[in-house]
Amino acid sequence: MSARRPQPHAKGAPLPPARAAALAALDKVLRKGQEVQAALDAVLADAAARNEASARANASKASASNSTTHVANASSTTPDGSALRHAGISRQDAALATELVYGYLRSEIRISWLLRRFLTAPEKLPPEALLTLGVAAHEIVHLDRIPDYAAVDWAVTHIRQRFGPGLGKLANAVLRNVARLGGDARNAEMYHADLPDPRDFLSVHHAAPRWLVDLWCDAYGMDRATDLLASSAQAPAPAVRVNAARPGWQTLRDQLIADHGGTACGHAGVVFPVGGFPAEVAALERAGLLSRQGAASQEVLDALRPDTWEGPVWDACCGRGGKALALLERGVDVGLCSDPNAGRLRGLRADAERLGLAVPAIVRASATQPPCATDGTCPAGGPGGPARPVPPVQPVTPDTPVTNVGTASAGAFRTILIDAPCSGLGTLSRRPDIKLRRSPADLDALAALQGRILDAALSVLPTGGRLVYITCTLNPAENEAQVERLLSPTGAASAAPVIVEAQHTTPADTPAREFFFGVVLRKG
Image (cartoon, rainbow, N blue to C red):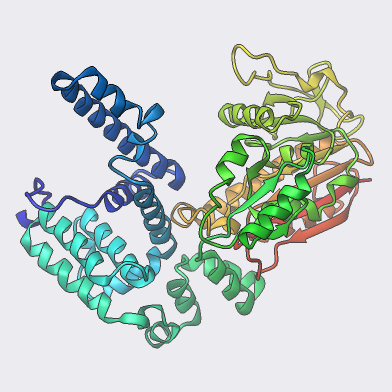
């Protein structure tokens, strides 16, 4: 129908900046498959650039008709464009856009179910119109500080201007029906009444894919799965890691706890109440006094007793180096960091310099084929096993030389840390877009990759060395089953036996609302 085709924007109230940014970012996530934070950052950066260009154009026009003194006084109020950056999308709008994007993704399954109660054929609506209804419904159901009429008004106006009066009337009726639900929209009883199957109820009420509900119920039982699902559907508590390499770090940690109602976590961390980072965190971060790192990530590392690890340590899946830097801050001998992603490695180098830490050797390499021998070969089956060629190590940047682990013998690294690529199911509160991208087939592929990485690490780990394995997921195939395979006499590629020295799983009632698994294995 022609009324449902996008129409040029009619004259009238423009789409509010926060809603415009949220819809644009969600389109990138849902339609283009971008990662949520990258999509949101891109949209906000584009808005800032447009605002700055517009402000400069206006300033240029003004300079033609005003005195030089007047222009100088005006420019002095916006040093480095800082005020222009928020000229059209304020900090408040940016914060609301962030809440709308993350909140909608966390609740999308529940919101879609609610909308279907009042839509006979939602699949026939234009995707933009359906997304607009979903974001507005999320505001009505979950954001108490926004009046229902305000959420209805912007969404109906936008849909009417884009798709015509017919869909505008439909949007008005649907959203008013959602608003009439009142508190029932968050009340478990309403969902129980329409969803008699307990797992269907958990899926809708906690906005989780049914396959994930089945996975956690089968693995952990209904009660624990319910707790995990409830935590994963809420915003995580923000946390920082105070730089323990700086003098007086304990005083800074204690001050942050006292000033902001925080609690200690891990070795040098602070977890704050849900609602955002304190204002001074950005300045302290720039000064190298702290870094942003999730509480559960800090806790799993501390629970595995890194002070007892024999060095040097090789972080073979270092990413941007959050855990490697945490180890360096507490004096652990990290000799090498490797990862296949050059961009992340450049970030690691920059963060190490910001924190005032000696930059460890950094190489670009896959953990499935570690570069680890002086003669260009690695033992594939433990001591005395056949050798395999090692692919060339690629430098992190063309003009910055990096140290090759090949300068040391294969047995130089007494501890290998595998912060493994995983399904990320323990981080749904922080990365809710994972629910849209993951499938059971992805979990199988990741488990296979983890197995190859673990076997490669064991093949170069000397006798008596430690293998530390960490994931940010809750999936037995990626966690406990990997350990069981390595403990089996016939399960791992290495013939040497391994024993478990320490193991940790984040408890379901953690205030962090994120979940990690970790284990320390010693090679016999």
